Image (cartoon, rainbow, N blue to C red):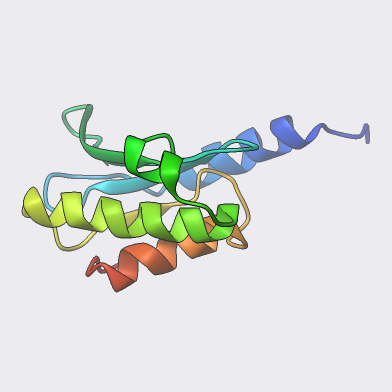
Length: 119
């Protein structure tokens, strides 16, 4: 078996997870994307194909803050939880998007839980 690149491995896992994880109006999907420097989170309604809320580490508030990428991810999790509360959303389905539940992805999830989201 040939060696696979990291990206193709992640995409394969992503599709395997996305077969089962579907966001609805009552329980939107909390999708996480992680680049080398930034982290992004979106609440997605897959029935209608719309993004209900989003938060990222590229927002102006985060540009001034100093800290590690893991700490920033936790703040992004809290921010997406605030935006979800404003939109009237309490429960979500977590989509780690093929990434391991570790490090920044785990930190974002913990921040969202601290912000009041249930999943």
